[in-house]
Length: 149
Image (cartoon, rainbow, N blue to C red; front, side):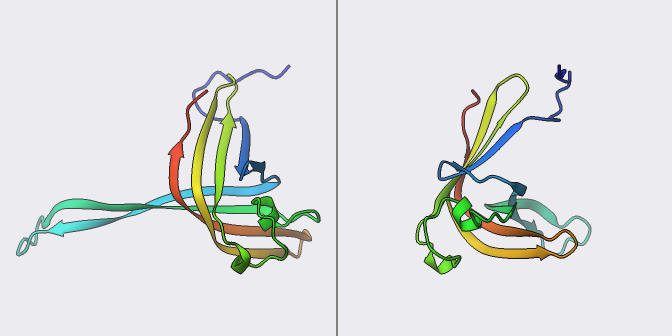
């Protein structure tokens, strides 16, 4: 019998990433990133303490996804596209990615990345382990948290 740890820190949980309702599967890395520009408003002729305030800009979201390439599905297939080939030029529609995890108490949390576009796609052949990984950078238009259930 596995004991559930008595801690508030996330140590283990069931984790699922879906694209257009299908599990992506065999992920090596799923890295959502948020960043925003900050502008310093400065006071002229004040050499000691010239920053009046910092003004935040818009938030940018990026997701990096790395997975093992499978004989049955490449990255474009795993992201839910039904196209022949592996060219980004063939992709005409955005996808929805849902990040979903379940904790030891059974509560589920979700983050929804809506209207995602693939910015770049690359494949890497690792010589020492003879594995092939694919990496995609995805830009979502909107990000929001789903309800905790």
